[in-house]
Structure formats: C-alpha cells, structure tokens
Length: 502
Image (cartoon, rainbow, N blue to C red):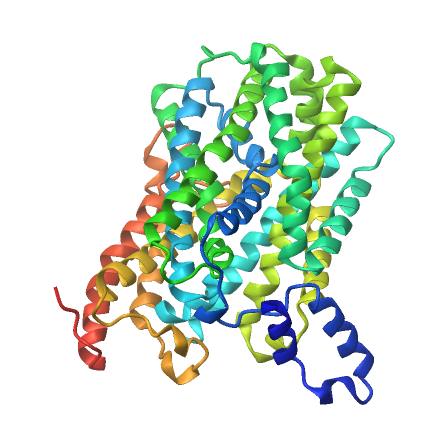
C-alpha cells in the first residue's frame, strides 16, 4: 500500500500523454514493483511497527550486504600487500573493522529519527549545495566497491574455467546485479532470502577446507618500525571496509517508527555487521598468509588471477565441490553489488531536480555502465585498487562521521535546537554551513600530510619505518573535530541561531 502511494504521487496524468507517454508508462510499471519513493522523506504514518518481522527483513539485507566475498577482499591486503603475518593481520583487521562498524552503526541510528536517506540528511550538516559534494563522494565510493566486486568475480570464474575470459565474468555479474536492482529493495530481499544461508555455510566450509593451512606463527616481514607502520596502515584500511557504510546504513532504517530507540538500532547494526564481516574476512588473512609462507601454488594463482584465483586454488583440493563453493561466493558478490547499484541512484538524486525526476531504473542502468567500464579498465590491477581505495574512502567517511557526531550530540541535543526533518526539501532552510566546509577542508589537509599511498607519501607518514605509516585517518578526523566545534560555535553566534543549552 505504501509503495502504491509513492507511485501515484510521483506521476501525473500528463506524464502518460504526448511523445514520451510510453516512456513514462514503462517507468510507472517498473516503479510499481516497489521502489517509487526515491529520496522523499518517509512520513511517520507510513512507517512500519519496528517489530521482529521488520528487523528480520533488515537482518537479511545486512547479511547479504556484508556476508559476501567483498568482505574478504578488504582483508587480503594485510598479508598480500602490507606483508603482515597472521597475528598482526588479525589484530589490525579485526580492530579496524570494529571501529568502522561503530561509525556505520551511528549512521544507521539516524534513520528512524529522520526518515531520510543519509545523503539527504547531509543538508542539515553541510547546507543545500555542499551536500551535493558529499553525495558525490558516496557515489564514487560505491562505484569503487562495485568495481572491486566485478573484478573479483571475473577472476573467480576464470580460475574455475580458464577458457572463460575475465571480461565475461565481469559482464555477467553486472547484468545480474542490474536486473535485480532495477526493481528495488523488495527484490533484493527476495534474493537475500535464497542466497544468504548458502553463502554463510560456504564461508564455514572454507574454514574446514583451508583452516589447517593457516600459519598462525607466521612473522611479519621487515624491521620492527616497518612492521608497526604497515600494521597502522592496514588498521586504517580495515576501518574503511565497514566505516563507509555510514553513507547508506540510514537508508535501510527509515521505515522504522520514530519510537524505536537509537541505541537499539545502533546495537542491532553492530551485532550483525561486525561478526559477519570478520567471519568472512578471517579466511582471507589465513589464505593470504599461507600463500606467503609455503603454499607456492596459491601464491602463483594470486599472481595470475588475484584474490579470486588464489581462493579458487585454495579450494581446489575438494575438486568439483570446491569449484561449486566458489560459484556460491561469486553469487555473494552479486548480492553485495545489488546493494551498491540500489544505493548509488539514490545518492545521485541529491544532485538536483533533474536527477530526482529521472526514473531510478535509468540511473541504475547508467551506474552499471560506468562501473562496468571502470572494472574492464582496471581488471588487472585489483590489489592496487584495494590498497589505494580503502584508505581514501576511510578518510572522507571518518571526517563526515566526526561532523555528524559533533553536530548531533553537541549542537542538536534534545530538547534544544533539534533537527527540523520536515524541512528536508526546503532550500531556504539550508544556508551554507561554513563550519562544516572549513573543517572538512582541514581534514583533507590532515589526510594529505599523513597519508601513505603509492601516489603520495605525506611528511608525517614518512617518519615511521621503511614503508611509512598511513596516519591520514587519524590526522584527518582529528583536524576535522578540533576545527569544527569552535567554528560551529562562532557560526551559531553570528547567525543568531537558537543557543545551545547545557
């Protein structure tokens, strides 16, 4: 009923007449499958009850999103890129993943309060126009994850059958992801109902098949300073595995009633996202360390076909059964990619009126074409993409989190000066928030002097070990917070906003 209301209000009778009548009738038909809301605020009277059924639906969505091969990809870089041993990779990866999960869960808690997509609510922290830039960052982030999923999937299919070109596996994943995402979140849930349990069982079987080969005592490579630097760098990369979900976690909770406790949503998100991501990521560390220390065939498979090739080789002792499990993991990448393809058009609609008027399925198609091209271009450089991509997305997501947290917990505390969510689409309600913009720029400066990437090593990063240490995450978030709070006080004073009471 709720989706029907959104369909009826989005289209006018005039849309179905004239030269483009057929186009709008097709759009109406596709939207009627259950995804017509777009970025409109979900009114309190059209939300669910916040019962076990609704949380069960969200559980399926999150298990499909984080319980996939995509979670493994982020953990491979510990041993394979930063030369960390098993224990160092485990501690850095798990701790980083936990910190990132707390960031994402905080964003999820905003859903029932606002009834808005996360990127729409950035208007309240940054202003009408700067919010478009934050949405662009999120679009680029989701495109990056889609590229990673497509390339990994192509590697896996080629490793199963060397006669299958890498490009074919990439295209197949794009087509399936696009087809399901076009029809909206209801069909994403249906897909998850079918594949979530087989995928999690597959990860359990990966432990059984490969666990005996994990070299628990494998040392990290390099002198102590270099190892410490690489540990910090991987820790920051692991934060990026989960922290970037902050840009979309809110989207899946906006159907929750306002009466649902923010703490309940926070703990629910943490309790699902963290253990499942770690459960899927630990085999990547074990397989990567084994390839570095003795499993030459695994290492050769990695050199030939990256993460997907190494995983397939690690499962090869089960012959056809191992290949079948790899196919299940290929499907899990599809599940994760559907979430990306669903969220990117919603973030793009923040750009302006022409984007909101454009049917969502058109934006899905454009999105799929873009990340397909990027995946085909970068299909031979997945390790480089991951090692450079994960820290970069961690920088901006943490800076955004710091501003959101400070604004909500310090300057928008109940019952004083609360957000006026009903004004979400009133342009005059959102002046440019110079405090957020300036502090975000200061955060970028902190990232630049602290980052340790192939294209740039900051002066502070160079101080640690032979390879440096990526301190950009700490410096960017620290600079952002230390500048935002005083600047926001000044902004409140000069704009005559409601004073903040203790």
